[in-house]
Image (cartoon, rainbow over all chains, first blue to last red):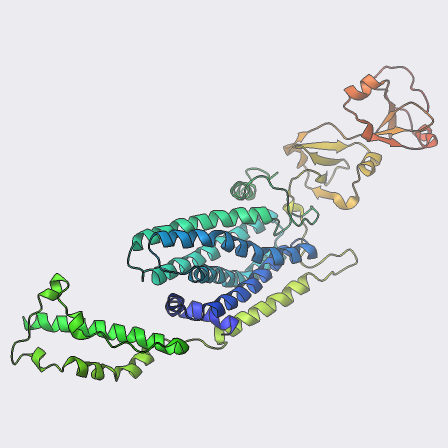
Length: 229
Length: 265
C-alpha cells in the first residue's frame, strides 16, 4: 500500500483501519508505511524548528525529532501491551505497536500541517520564548489528537476481548499520561530542537532543570514577569 | 404478542446480518487466508433459550406471520442477495494516492524546498533568511552571555547569576570574547541584574616581578601577594606582555591606594 495513501485511510476510514488491525490484516505493511511517513514528516518539522538557529541545528533537529517519537514509542509500548494482557486483551504486541504507531502518524501529519504556520512565525518574529511556546502548543494539540486516535483504536480493537473492557480503557487513559510524561522528558533530554540565539550549536544540551519549569518560565518572560536565566 | 415475536425475529435477523457483514468483510480483505467457510450460525442456535429473554420465545401459532416465515436454510439463501447492496454501503478503501495523499506529498515537498531556501547563506557572513531577524528580543540569559547597552560603551558578561563588567579591551580579548559575541540590549537592561565583581586582566612582563591591573586604560600596581589574593585574583588572570608595553601605559592609583609611587617594570 502506498505510504501516503495509508495516512488517508487512517484519516478518512479510521474504523475500517482499526478493524483491519484487529483482524491482523497486513500489519507489517501498515507499520512500514506509517514508519516511513511519520519519520519523513517529523524530519521536515524538525528541520523547520532548527532553521531558527543554524544549518547544523536544522540537520540535528531533523534527525532528533523522529528519534524522539520513536524512542518514546519503544519505551512505552511494552507497558501498554503487558497491562492490556493482564486485563484480558487478546491483542498481539504487533497490534499494540501498530495502534501506537497510528497515533504517532496522526501526530506527524498534524505537525506537517502546522509546519507552514510555524515557518511563517519563524520568518516574522524573533522572540525565542514565543517561538518555543508556539511549538509546545503545536505539539500539544497534535499529540492530543494522536492519542485520541489511539484511544478510539484501542476501544475498537480490544473490545473484542470480552473481559476487563473498562479496566483496559482505564489502562489506556493511564498509559496516555505516562506517554506524555515520557515524551516530554525525552524531549528535554534530546534538546535543543530550536537552538537558543546567542549560543553556539550544541547537539545535546547539559541536563538540568525540567521541561515543565522551562515552559512556565517562558510564559513568565513573555508576560513580562521575569527573565528566563 | 405478535408484535413482540416479530421484534424478536428482527433481532435474530439483525444478528445474522451482522455476522454475514463481518464475514464478508474479512473474506474481502483477507483473500489469501480464507479458511473454509464456517456454516452460518443457525437461527435455531441463536434462538437457543440461553438467556431469559430468548427463553420466553414460544413456538409460532398456526397461521401466524412467524409460521409463514421460510425455514432457516432458505433464510440463508434469501440473505445472500444482500451482499452487493452491503458492499456498496462500505466506504471505499483507499488504495492509491488520492487527493489528500497527493496534497500531503506536495506539502512535504514544498516544505523541503522552503527549508533549503531559508537556510541558503545570503552574504559572506553566513546570514540566512531564517536567521535574518534581529535577535534582541530573543536573548537567552545564560552563563557567558556578553551584553552592551545601546548608549553605553561598557561591556558586561553574565556569570553565576551576575553581570560582571569587563574592565578593558585587553581583558575582553584575554577572556576570549569577540565582537560577534556582544549582544546590544536596550538601555536599562543591566539595571535588572545584580552586578558582580569586574573582570580585570593582570599584566606582567617576564623581566619584572611586579604585577599590574589594567583598568580604564591605566596600569595599577598590586603591592603584594596578600593584596593580589584579597582582590580575588588568580594566576590564570595574569597575561604576559612586553615590558615596553607596560611602561607605555600610564600609571593609575596603586592597589591598595596610597601604597607609594608605583615601581616601573
